[in-house]
Image 1 (cartoon, rainbow, N blue to C red):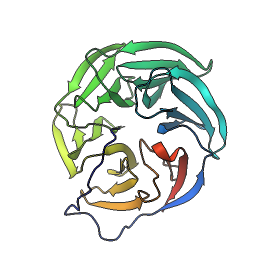
Image 2: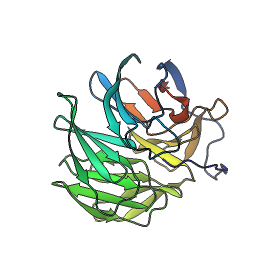
Image 3: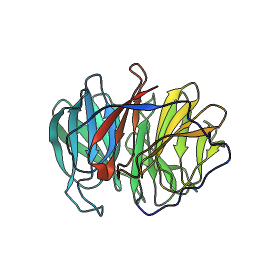
Length: 269
């Protein structure tokens, strides 16, 4: 996530009329600048930046929220810096925080330890594959790092504004300030669609289709043929859209709204 004024351009291939819609189900009470959300069977974990401008040490938090939108604990984990993307693996919550990965014991509700990501500057999203390998994007450096056995290395670079990540099968998908990319296991990079500055979250819907966000409140659907359509625009209401997730069973999309200071749940129609 990167905050600056942007101009949205109309791209060839964007649908004039959306075939999908997001219907609002609920919105939480105010929480402090939510950037990312991840779910278990009954809980939403939300990273809270809690401040703007960013990088004020010790102000970041992780909140716990019910699937009904009720805040369980707005201060579940405190004292973080700039917590953003998250992943869950074997009872641990992994959180990208500037130049390190925080490892939180979910059952104990405590920070266990942290993993340094050498050379990183501004870690953003984070995903974990079926082997437990961690991938995290550095939006400032245009790098995706991979972490194996708590050792980090550059996985792919030269991706301006790389932000949202998704693992689907053996492929890594990425949203950047120029494109939405698919990366094969042999590191062959394929552009699925053109994108633009302010790119933020990416969520797989299955069947080679995705939702992608621009932080200022635009949510797009990308189909398997590379056609993009704008399905939600909350910019005028000053409601942002960051690192979203999709519950495929319930077809619910959970969206952190940044300066909107809430999580909003939408039914995908």
